[in-house]
Image 1: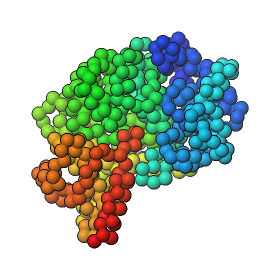
Image 2: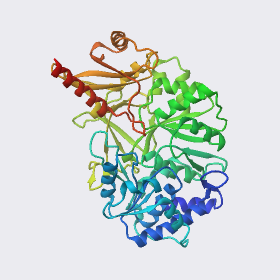
Image 3: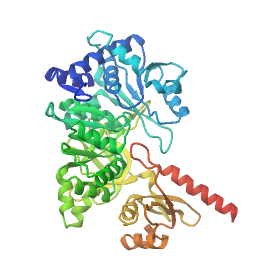
Image 4: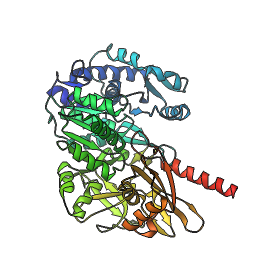
Length: 504
C-alpha cells in the first residue's frame, strides 16, 4: 500500500465528490488526482530530490503531497513562521529540491543553493497544464513519503522520515474506507508541517470526507467556518480549544453540525476539557496522542471515555480525563525503567512503542532498537485498566535532591486554582538541591500571593513538589502546535538569577 493508491481508491469510488475546499468551488477527487499527477510529471522532469512547501494551509498542500508521492519525491512542509535564517537553513537541508512557496514569502528564501523556487500561483498553473497519466515509481512503499522537521524546542530540528508503508498502515488501521457521508466535512486548522496536518489529509480523504482549510487560526474565524461550511469533524491543539470556548461563551455561538472534535499536540488542562464537555454536550471529544515519528495517533481517549469520566463520582475514573486513553489495536506500548526493564502498571517510566505505522527514523539515523521498539522520550504510566497517562518529556523531568519530579502533575494542580488560567513548571539550577522547582503562572484577574499558591500545591501533593520560585506573566509562550516553550522560560529564570547575583 502507498499514498497515491489511497487517492486512486477514493477517486474510483467517488469520482465526482468534492474532496477539498468550499462547497461551492472545491476540488473533486478526480480533479485532485488529475492535478497531482500533472504536478508529479513536472517534478519528475525537474529531477528534484524532494518537494518542499512553504506557505499557509491551502489547496497547494494536498496537491503537492500527492504530487511528491506520485513522483517518489518526499513532501517536506517547512515552518514558515521560523526566522528567515532558520527557515533558509532547513531549506538548505532539503536540497536538491523544488520549493512551492507562497508568493509573499518567496523573497525570504530566494537564493538558497540547489532549491528551485516556484510561487503558489505558478504551481497552480503547472498543475492545470499537464496531462493526466500516472508516474510509475518502483518499490514506492519503502520510499520516504514525507519528511517532517521536529519542533527543535530542545535542540537542532531533526528530519523525521515517514515512509509510504508507515502512513498507509496508519490510515487503513484507523479508518474505514468510504465511511463518511458526502455531507460530512473536516476542518484543518493545524499547519501542514505538523504530523496532524498530514494525517488529517490522508484519513479524511480515505473516509471520503470533504476537507476545508483555515489558512491561519483565529478562534472567531474557526467558529464562523464551522457554521458556514457545515463542519462535522475538526482537530485542534489545547490552546486553540480554550480560545474557541471563549468565543462560544462570549457569543453564545451554536455549532449545529459539529459531531466530533479531536485534540492533541500538547497537554490538555483538565479544566479546559471539562469546560468543552459542558459547552458542547452534543460533540464527541477525542484525545489523540501520537508523535511525528509514529505517523500520528498511537493512543486514543474516545467519546464514551470522556462522558463516563465527566459523569463519574469516582476519582480514578474522573482522572482518566487527564489520560490519553488506550493504545490503538495495531500498537504495542511498553513502559520501561532506565535500565530498559518493563515496568508493571501504575509505575512511571519511559514509553516505548511498536507497530507497522511506527517510523522511528530520521534522515541518516534509525532510532528503533533491534526489536522494532521506538523510545518516545515521553514519561508516563498505564493504570490497571490500560489507560495511558503522559507525565511529560523526560528532558523536562525535574531532579531535586536526587528525586525525579514530573512537572505535569504540579501544572495540573496549579490550573485547578480558581485564579490561575495557565501554568508551567520548570527545574532551574540550584546550588543546594541541584534543581529547584519554579512555576510560571498566568492570573488574568488578580494574582494570588506566592505563599497561598505554595500552600495550594502542598495541600494537594507534598512539600517536595511545591515550587520554591514563582513568576507571573500575562501569557505563556507556545508554539503554534500547542507546545509551551519551556526552554525560553527556563532561560529567563537563569538570566534573572544571574542578574540578581551580580546586583547582590
